[in-house]
Length: 177
Image (cartoon, rainbow, N blue to C red; front, side):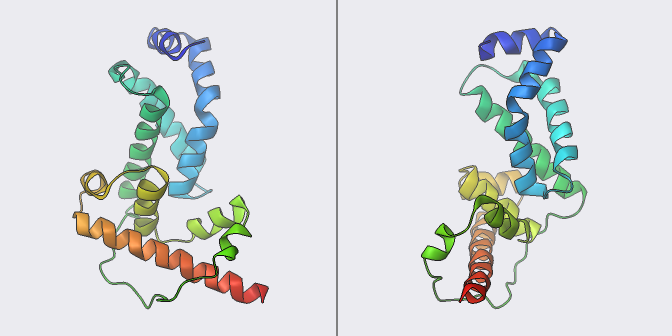
């Protein structure tokens, strides 16, 4: 079934179409939620995301991709969840971060789960900006608007997230030596 027909049928409260939409996009939405909230809360936030998707489906104007719209709804739901849980804070002071590069091959030796584990350990403020910028492709102006922060704070948080990842990779590198 094409997206437009699926959207129309979901808007008419067709339960089979709603189930099809859920089944089609659940893996994507769960992956996004996991990156932002971690594995413990991902399924709860995924359910909240689908509630919002169905609630605001009538607002989708068939401009751009439907999957992109679903991603935006999910990302916004994750951000609201973090704000509500008071987990989304901006750190204006970074602790001592490494200034030297990590061995480039170390990243290629990590599997997806190992990389997700490192990302899960990033403080929520850094992780949110990292996900929005690196994974979702938002620019710093858009991130600043979404999070209610300054663009410079967004850039700073991204830098700190990258350095946090770098430090974690250094620790992994030392263990392997």
